[in-house]
Image 1 (tube, rainbow, N blue to C red):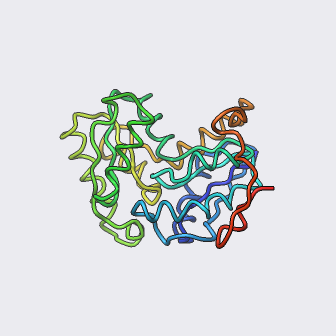
Image 2: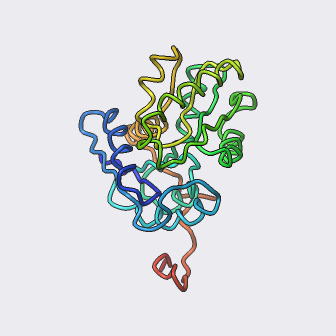
Image 3: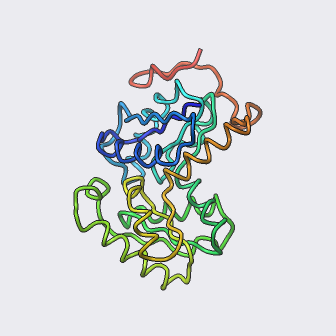
Amino acid sequence: MRIRVVNPNTTESMTALIAASARAVAGPGTVVEAVTSAMGPASIESHYDEALAVPGILAALAGADGYVLACFGDPGLDAAREVATGPVVGIAEAAMHAATMVGRGFSVVTTLSRTRGRALDLAARYVSPGACRGVHACDIPVLELDRDPAARKEVVALARHALEHDDSDVIVLGCAGMAGFAAQASDELGVPVIDGVAAATVLVQSLLTLGLRTSARGELAPPPAKSYSGLLRQFGRP
C-alpha cells in the first residue's frame, strides 16, 4: 500500500522530519511518500494560515491509497475526505483518539498560544468531555522547533508541568514539527507521549488493511460539479 503524508506548509525541512516519523512506523509493504504543499504558507500558525493552506492540501490528494494530513490544526480535513479516493486522517484526530486508549486524560503541548483555541475545538469534536485536560503553549514558532537546540528541552519541561497541573497521564504533541520529540520525551516523563504523524500513519495503514475508505454517501460524498474562477479555477469539478 502507498500512503501519502501531506505537509500543508511549504517548508521542505519540515517535510523531511514528518517523513522520518511516518516511515519509522510503516509496516512491511507500506510505502510512505511525504510531499510538501505546492502552495500556501511557510508555516501554519493562525486561522488565516489554515484557510490558505487548504487549496494546496487538496491539490496533493492524488496518487496514493491513503493520506495523512500533517498539521495539528487538521485544516481542510472534511474537504479532503470529500475528494480523496482513499481514507484521510488528521494528526490531531489520530493523536487525540490514541491518547484516550492509553490513559484517562491527556494534555496537549503545542507551539504558539494563539493556537490553543483551535486545539480545544478539535478536542471537543474528537473526544469525550474531560478527556483533554489542558492545552499548553511553549510559544516557540513552528519553524524554530528544529532550529533551536533548546526547543526539545523546553517542550519536555512544559509537558512535565502539564502532567502535574492537569493531573493528566498522557501527552499529545501539538505540532507536526515536534514529531521527533516523542520517544525521548516519553522516556524522560515516564508516560505515553504521542506524535500525531506516527499515529495517523498507523491508523491510515490499519484502515487500508481493513479495506475501509470514506463513505461516498451523505455529507462526505464527492462535492457537486461546478466551475470555480480566478486563482481557484483549477479546483473546478466537471
